[in-house]
Image (cartoon, rainbow, N blue to C red):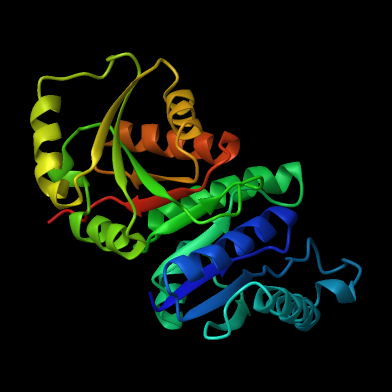
Length: 280
């Protein structure tokens, strides 16, 4: 893999994401890590507002650059000498993360799921969903208390619905190939409440898509889908849970955004999120 783009706000939670990105860089044989911090310029409430030099754009940028340089020094100690590291800071919005990743030559985005305060936790939680929804690149979400160790398996949580329309097969196979790990497929349902006649057929289609990886198949019949996934992962150490960020069907999109948000907040393992297949 050429490069990993790591988003940071310099919080302790973001530090966990940076540490996990270092592990990923070794596991994926990455050539480069790019640390990215997006800062916002405060908007004066009125012309009479008292000037605060700390809110001056030049000062904000200088502070960010200094923090990124210090973070680079910390990261350098955690990665092999052959992996390059650099940083970028500007006012690019997270909704434009594709442009940032493309300009930096990144193939994977890594970010934390919480911020420096409860308010920032809520905002960053929303930001994580925004990035997952808009990014055409795989996104790894790292909870603050994740175990910093290489992933040993990928667990693909799938509801077996419209798999041909929604699953980005090329992107999925590329990331599975990059990790070169055992693949397990979790049929996510809450006690068969969403079972349809098409699900067995979709399961067969998914099997045909991924047969070359000889994946294991598991059913999660639990009224609490998040709890079911967590329970599975507890028995499979160092699990990387894979989700598809759906928008093809509005209600499914809401379900998967909710699932991603809940998992991001309560799980002790990282999430790998791929955007739904582009519709023709």
